[in-house]
Image 1 (cartoon, rainbow, N blue to C red):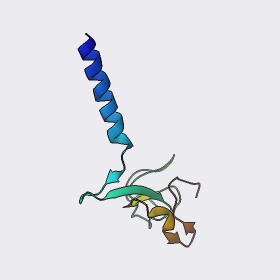
Image 2 (tube, rainbow, N blue to C red):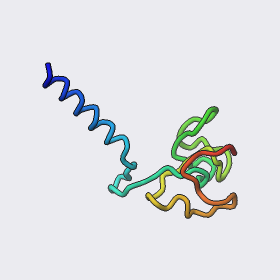
Image 3 (spheres, helix red, strand yellow):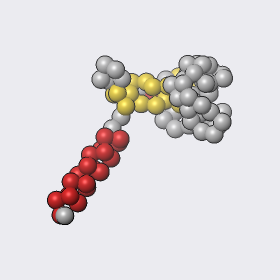
Image 4 (spheres, rainbow, N blue to C red):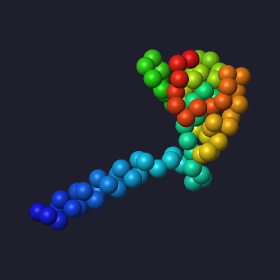
Length: 91
């Protein structure tokens, strides 16, 4: 019984560790979600009520939609509305 509990705990920790890591691109590079940098119809997925998934942004640089960018670059991306953000904001 103790072995089963330890195995279950180990699997739970492994799952949490895997979800805490940054996303990676198909070539293995670390990526992060960057809000407010996607062009209309070019976002990677949703953020917030009333949004759907990839390609749903109706306007350029919508602060509720994100685009995957190389990790560590988001807040240095300049747009006409300011810099990219690691968190969504009301548009």
